[in-house]
Image 1 (cartoon, one colour):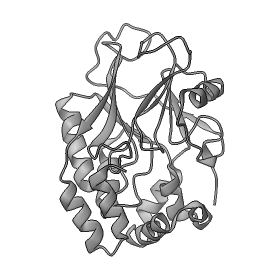
Image 2 (cartoon, rainbow, N blue to C red):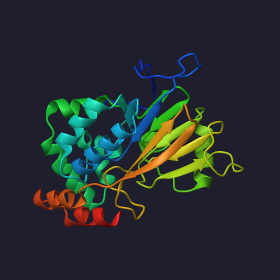
Image 3 (cartoon, rainbow, N blue to C red):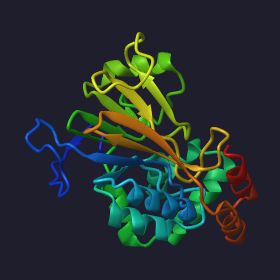
Length: 260
């Protein structure tokens, strides 16, 4: 398998609904989604909220598949709607068997089932995804900015400050832990400010683990200079029922109700 290593991709997009285009960087409302995990009900509800929020662009931080019952439909929606995506560990495990060795039995069974559902085109697209993308002083990565292919986690402010040495952008957006968090890189900062550096976890669309079952995503407004973690209710009963109907581990359905 060809690995992307530490390569960072740089993208330029023409944004049709921009304000203040005379400024140095694009001004936009950017929706950042992560860890959808084949939960179609959560994804469609989040996308509806993104529309209500009038986001100019969507990006995805990976783990579009795994755990959930609708990998085909979720991948289709993501490919259709997002400006770009990076690779998550569950995405990589679809086409790299060795990645599955780090999974617990529930996750391993789900990714093995997922790999059988996806056609060659979907798998080929997953293979093209980089580990990280840098754009307009923002870094997007699934796990961490240091050695993202190792799939490490960030759980604390101390860890975030350590990782702050491994990216130069103002904000690094991550997912992976499924727990929304805003970590300032400077210890004297205690709330979001548009002139300081942060590592921000946008949480999980399809399998939150912070005790709140609602889908989570991030909204960055570079015009207002604000960041918001948004929570969206969805039909969790249907999502859980479909997991059971597909023959996937019952544990994966039960945890949706508890947000764990």
